[in-house]
Image (tube, rainbow, N blue to C red; front, side, top):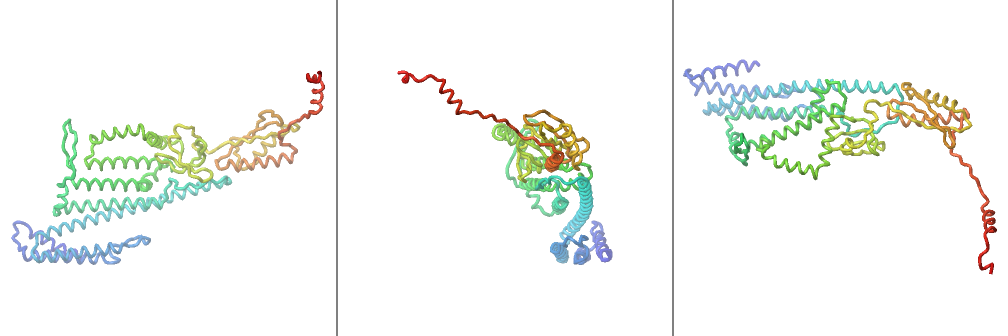
Length: 500
């Protein structure tokens, strides 16, 4: 600041004062010396500020300082200032003055972008910390809720679940911020230096192909230049970057403030991603001269192709959108579709991945969830009912058996008290008095463990109370087949030849 205020500012003031049309100041001598002194001072200040441990210092000790980038900027900036000072002393005063003004404008733009980038990074860091704290609180609450009941059957881990981690959120937001920073810096620098770089404006004069557009019934010729192609490529590249890294920014910026679950966040992110992809693609193609008037016949042919050859793919895509909006199931739900039963791991626009109980990933087309019968075990309530069928012998008292079954169900810690368990005598079998014990459990993973424990306890209690679990019985009557055959032969008349 001392060197800037004592050397650069006074020399710049006198140069501006001497450049007035009616000043009559000796620009060829004194003006060139002052400009050379100002440029040399700015180069020296830049060399000092970009030294190790000075202006370019990162507060985060985890990240490494970009040493090569700092050294490159330090050498390039100082060298450019010295070269401009030498050109000024050689007599190129006006050229050096314009280049120096653009250089200082570029420096101001880079400092402004660096400030905004730092503020954005700070905002993202705070958002990621709040997101991590929220995730930790949710995990603690779920652990406390799970500790109140004993663990049931463990479900298979979901590979690639849609709940993105804090590390992925951080990586995605930083990639998106880096892309926006580079795009903004390059665009502003090109705008600043556009008046002295005529080659950039000449790109708009290089026609690559011609196109046409209907405006008010008249066909207007359009020329697609090399500049249009470059701008379209940049637009498509930004669309691709935004589509890939959008979930992290939405998670930090908006979704963490809303009290929504993970499936809802995934649905919102997916729909927003499709909108950005569609809008960016249409915008990029329009810059290439591809208007609707050019694409309508292609769209018509594509629609016919969808109707015949790609109808299944199109049906699965529409079904995927219906699933995302209607939400008949969510990530982590236990569902049954046809002969497949398992946990939903991923929901895509074409198909949904289900992890079955053998830890196999089954990919089911989305059309099946719309047209076939779907059983969701955990959509609005995870409570499910178990039915255990028991048959006792006819010599036992049915009232005693019913009382014992209800006592066994009430004593189990994972059987819910509300709804309460009940036991009914359903009928008389060939060898049994039939009962059904109906109980409720709170989680889908508790079904098989509770069923096994109840059945083993029933066998034990019935054996202690001399209640017989009946088994199929059959009375078999045996007849003397030899005697029957002899009697039948005696009553039969002799053959004809014996009579002769």
